[in-house]
Image (cartoon, rainbow, N blue to C red):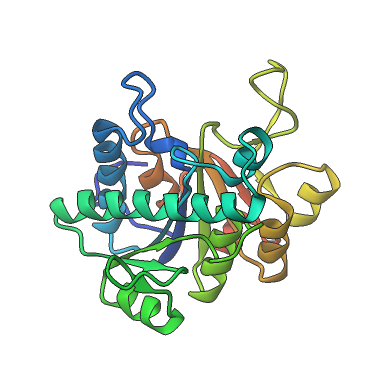
Length: 254
């Protein structure tokens, strides 16, 4: 499929794109938010935006602070650590907003934790209205509650705004039957149903997030974000990752 945005057509109208906080890390620079990586990520988002796709974006905060590891390794109370992690996602959200707006993409940040001087509160109807007005909406501060991951945030917000799919950008090019880094003979799945994923005990999202997707019939598309143009390709229906759904891919993108 051509990557020319003038000829390529999206198969999804409204998506929630889930990025890890670590995706903004500078592997070589050592920076928490690497400007080069940030700009590259925002260019990828802009390409999808220019297709007319409505984009909700959820970003983690693991490049700054991860609540669970803070509780395990730093002696931080788990509730406090998770709150610190949620605030870290706000920092990442503001960085993405600033970069995207400099590229001419209108953005609104909505926070699950009230902080009116830096972000709007999350209001479902307002979020949908922003999307309908062709603004990218970044959902920050997780769900506003400890003990829930940003995977759960993505599943919750996708269900609330009635997205067509969760696009989960990862470091691997899909879902495998075992860790492809450790096992060269690992087999990649192009498509799975939710029940197959449960039966095979595949770790696609944490259990709470996966249960939300299963209950709300929210498809999950897992793909590698490190390859340039992959977000664009995934939105245009190229088979570059793994689709998890209770429907066949043909039914989903028809």
